[in-house]
Every structure is written in structure tokens, then in C-alpha cells.
Image (tube, rainbow, N blue to C red; front, side, top):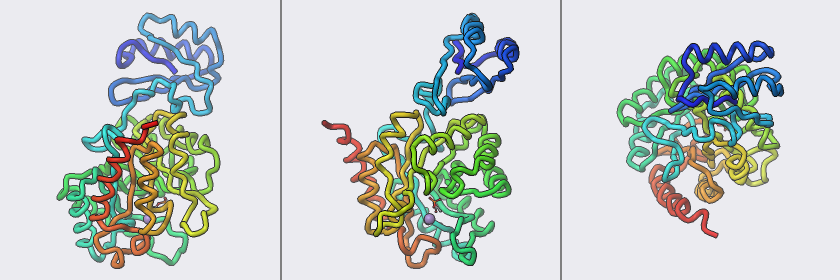
Amino acid sequence: MIIPKANKLDALQLKEVEAIAGDFDCSILEIQGRNRCVYAILGDEGREVMFKRIAGLSFISKVDMIESPYKLMDRRSGLSDHRVRVGMTEVGKDQPFIIAGPCTIDPANPNLYLESAHALKEAGVHALRGGVWKPRTNPYSFQGDNDSLPIILQAREETGLPIDIEVMDSEQLKLALDAKVDVVQVGTRNAQNYCLLKEIGQLTAGSSTAVLLKRGRHMASPNEFIASAEYLVAEGNPNLMLCPRGTTPPLEGYRNHPDESITPLLKNRTWAPVVVDPSHSVGHADFVSACALASIAYGADGLCIESHTDPPKGIGDDPKQAIHPDKVRQLISACREVWKNRYLP
Ligand code: PEP
Ligand code: MN
């Protein structure tokens, strides 16, 4: 990892660094953070001479040789001071960052989504979620609909809140990026779809688009999750949030095995904000608040919550696990209290 003295290498300096790396069959990847660029060395970088030659250049501040399977995600990397923003808000600064909204947008009843969006804005959330295209276990269940995209765009227009939608393939990704969605969500089923992760990283590189990467439901070690995130960053987008959302096998009684306790492990190993999804973790509206509060206590930077003004009229997961926006408002205030006290001995 190469850290220049200035915020960015100019074209000549980059050429010089690339020429040295090229002598050792390595290449250089520029990674644009919000305020500055760092440069990863791709290839077999365990060559001392190359390191010394690059470190010796007058415009280089330092060259870090991080022995980590995820060198860009590592909290010792040059991205350690990178901060993720969604819209105008820095994730995890001063208070929990809250994304909320229905699981699934009903294209036949746009008002249900719009009403929920307005109520959530009143409740104090920072961003809206809503499924346009849905990964459904049952092929005969509602799969989402392109017609739902204009509905969430209208909600953004009316509320001024940034929006988060899940994409599962290239076509959906392109539609989402053409619509300038603020957060692209990678769901649990695609958490190790490396082709999709690479494509998202490439198409959002250098942009302000953020990615909410959910933890694979089958993932065991934290490092497996971090490695998936590394794909996005390695393609050039460090604006990413790690989202634990429960794993299988389930803790019987919950939808999944709630995994909010992975949060301090992720925060110790990486610089990325952790935004826990308590809704899919527990799968039942009655248990969402407890999981949300526990997540904040464990050190999460935010939450992604399913919420609907009239859950029984919702589709997808909403009838069983969405909570009312009034509840979200109460939860936000309770989470802020936990946030303030969470590191007390
Ligand atoms: C969702 O957010 O509605 C969703 C399907 O999430 P997950 O990928 O975590 O199941
Ligand atoms: Mn859902």
C-alpha cells in the first residue's frame, strides 16, 4: 500500500511508480477515498527492492507492507481514516446511522411505500430502503418489478432522503446506477458472488455511491465476510458498509442466527462501518428492537430496519417482520441512549 505525501499522485509521479512496479511484474491500483488517494500494489509485492525504490521517491510518504488477506480492508491500511458518507451524512458519526423502509415495494400500491417513506422521515431516519427486485427462496413468490423503481425515486424526491436498493445482476445494477441510487445493496445470497462484487466495484469506482454488503447467511469466519468486501474496494470503491443480518443454521425461534456480536470483531479488523440488519436476523417484529439495541451496544455504527406503516398490507417480509415507523422513532431514541453509554466500563 503506497501513501503519497500529497492527496494524490500527479500523472508523472504515477507513471514513475508504475514503472518501478512493472519491473517486478506488479501493477498499481488507485483507490480514491473521500479526501485522498492511496495506491495498492497488485502482484507479488513481497519484494524488498521494489518497496525500497518506491519508498525512496521524494513524493511518497510511506509504503506499508501489510501481511493481511484483506490488505485494503485492514484497519492498518492507508484507508484507515476513510469515512463513508450516504447523502449528507457520515455513517457512524455521533449517532447511529439509520436506514429503514419496507422489505418490498408493492408496484400496485405506490401510496403504501410513499406513506411509509414520509412517516420514516418524520421518525428521523437517514436513508430509505425498499426492495425493487427481490431474491426469493420460492420461485413462485413475488420477484419484484421494474415498476417499483420510479416509486422509490419519487420517495427520494419527496423526502430528500437517500435511497438503498438491492441488485442481483448486471441489468439491475445498471438501472440502479442510471437512477443514481445512493446505496447499492448486495444481499446475503450474493455476498460471495465475486463477479457481481467486482462489477459493482468497477461501475461505482471513484463515485459517491455507497454499497451495503450483507453477510452471507452461511458465512462462518469474519474473514470470509471481509474478503468479499475487499473485492469491492480492490475495484476502487471504499464507500462500503458491512451488514451482519443473521446466519444459518438458525437459533430455533429466530429466522436466522442473530450475529450482531460479530460487530466488534469486524471493527477491530477493518476500518469499515458496521450497519446491522436486526430485521432479517430475528425475522419477527416483536424481537427487532432487542436485536437493534444489542447491535448498538456491540459497537455498530448503524442499523438497516424493515418498517412499514401497515405491515399486514405489505408484501415479502413485511407482514411478519416490519415494525411501524412510530416504533422506529422510539428505537432511534433508545439506540442513541445506548450509543452514549456503550463503552462505559
Ligand atoms: C432484504 O433486505 O430484504 C433482503 C432480502 O435481505 P437479505 O439479503 O439479508 O436476506
Ligand atoms: Mn426483507
